[in-house]
Length: 419
Image 1 (tube, rainbow, N blue to C red):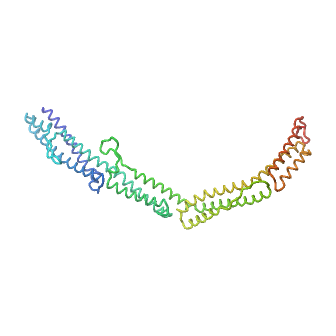
Image 2: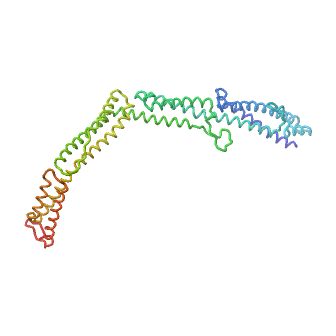
């Protein structure tokens, strides 16, 4: 090499040496490395950190060798302002040839040059940094979040216990116990084996290329949200239990009254309507009344976790019972409604005939009396009565319509009618 080539190469190698030293010192001071050195590791993290520690030892040993080689090259270059031929030959050998001897490991000795040594050290540094950065990222992300969730879990457990949501007594209490055990185990595993919770980015070869795997933590957090909603529901029951019980009693009372009315109406229908099928009316909902008594007992004994699902069920079934009672009343009174409709229709046609001055028609009068006698006597045969009303309607139409075809005259009271 010429003097200029030697100086340029020496400067470049010096810069590389300085960069390697800075990287090794930064790795030495990295918080993740200090945590790894002081932790009781297990699993994947323990295996990789054991290898990484050996790599760190080798890196410092290789750095010492390249430091010595660089020092020797600088000493040779510093002998003269203008290096002699033999100095340039020594520099060429030191800087461009495999002049450094590495030993240790499974090799007795290995001769390498600057490019090979720098590449070897870069690979080893990246391997160690990948372990350190990944472990530090997991430890920075998960334990603090687990601790916060655990604190929230403890507060929720105290609140749940106060309203009777306990393991063995309420499903949410069992869920609380399971989530507590899961968070305890998760924290222990994260601290001892952080790399088991590291998700590498596909195809990325950069140190620390990935993200913490929060799958188990997220599942526990969602379970805690579900439990919180259940506990809130139980607390809500405690706040409005009395009002809901009063509402239930009112609904069931209305259902009882409606059924009693239906039974009374059924007797009336059977007495007043002939040839009609009248459905039977069931008795009061005794099972719901018994469960309502149980709900009141739960409230007095503050068993809110048992009262909550019972009230939900009772409210739905009580409303269904009221609807069933109303349907029963409608079904029972349907014949009376039909009779009332026929009566109204008969009177409407009679009023129409009267307005047109035909109320005194003998045929209309006879058919009206027949229909009225059927509808206002008991028992009433609805089928026959309907036919009588229809005959009166047809007769009224036959009598009234011909008169509607004549000229329009002034009614004596100031109105108009057709002759």
